[in-house]
Image (cartoon, one colour):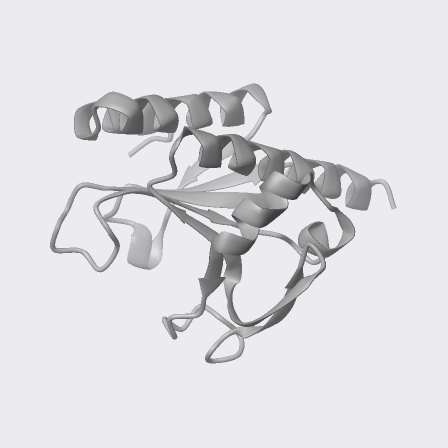
Length: 165
């Protein structure tokens, strides 16, 4: 399936605020020159996209309508923080607090280098057992989507800054 289908799949699966929030987030990503790639391997048969900026991962999105899956029905955004995004940048207080509420605790799926996750400092606060994708947003509401947009912008700035080193 091609990357353009994400909006069509959102239209097919969601209604109301969920649909509106998901489409608004996808539009934001496209306006900010993010590239969408379909997941491979384990994710190949799912509606899963890797979101990149300048060939670096920014986030990952799953649109799930299958109640038999291990992931919740709805949509999930996992953030990639690179090596410094969540330590070298400090967002506004509200965004920071929303991020802290969405720390992705390792579920031992095999994706993390260290089984059980690792200790990470995210916006000045330490957390144990954090997944390789340190932030996870399940079915984000409009306020949370606005915060995730700010986190995406921080990640984009981090990618640009590291490219100029």
